[in-house]
Length: 378
Image (cartoon, rainbow, N blue to C red; front, side):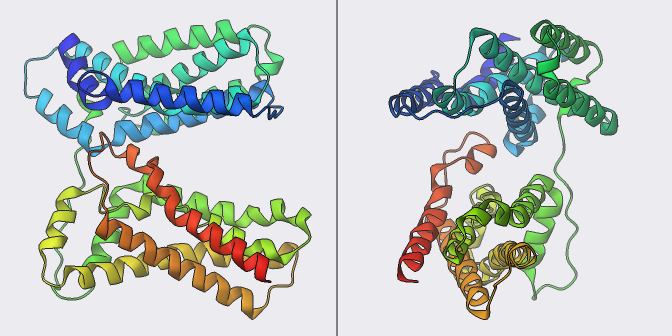
C-alpha cells in the first residue's frame, strides 16, 4: 500500500514533496496578505460549507478523470497488487492532492476575509474530506444515477447545516460510511476509464482539426460542462451589473466571459498532439485558423447570450455594442490560440492543473485592461 501511494504521491506532490510545500506556502502568503488588508465579508456557515464541498468534489472528480492517472493505473494493474490497497492508496493520494493544493487555496481566501470559529473550521475540513470521499465512491459506480442522488442528498444536508445541531458528528458518521463503501463495495479496476476510441474519418482533407476538436469535447465532457457554465453565467451577469446604471460596464462583461480555461489549453493537455501538429507542414495555419475559429465561436456565443440577457432585462443594446462583442471574442480567441501555439504549458502533474495555471488570467486580464480603456474613452 505504501509503494502504491508513493507512485502517485511523487507524481502529484513532487519527488520530495516540493510541489506540496510550494502550494502551502502560496496559501500562507495569500492568507497573510488578505488578513493584513483588513477586508471583511460576512459568509454564512452553510454557504462556507457548500463552497468547500462543491469545490472539493469538482476538483476530486477532475483528478479522478485525468488521463495521466489512468495511465499509471493501467501499469499498476499489470502487477500483482491487492485491490483494497490499490484503491485506498489511489484515492488517498488524490484526496490529499485535492485538499492540500486546491481546497487549501479556497480556505486561505475565505478564512482571511471572514469571521470563523473552531467549530466552523472543523466542519469545513470534514466537508472537504466528505466531498472527496463521495466523489471517490461515485466515480467507479456503473450506475452513477444512484451516486448522483447520494451526492445531491449530501449537498442538501450541507445546506441544512444551520438547522442541525449535531452537524459535525453527522459529517463524521457519513465519512465513516463513505470509507466503508469504498472498502467493501467499490471495485479497484472500475477507477480505470479507458480513453474513448475515435473512429477513423472517411474524408481525409477537410475539417480535420474541427473534427478533432469536436470529438475531443465529446470524449471529455467536463470541458463541455465548463463551457455551458460560462454560458449560464453570461445569462445572469446583467443582474449584477444592473445597479451600475451605465452601459460602460458592457466591455467588462465581455472580458469576464473570455475566462473559459479548458478550451484554451487543448494543446497543452495533449502533448502528443501538440508535437504532431508542430511537425506538420504549415501546421500553424492548418491548426491555428480552425482552433482560433472554434474559440471565437465559444466566446461569441457567450457574448451573444450576455447581450440578449441584457436587452431583455435592461435594454438599450445597439449595433455598436454588438460589434464590440465580436471584436472582444475575436481578439481573445486569437490571443489564446497564439499562446497555445507559442507557449504551451509543460511539466504539469495532472490535467486539472492546467485549468488552474496562472497563465489562464493573461488573456482575460488583457481584455479587462482594454475594457477599462474603452470605458474611460466612452
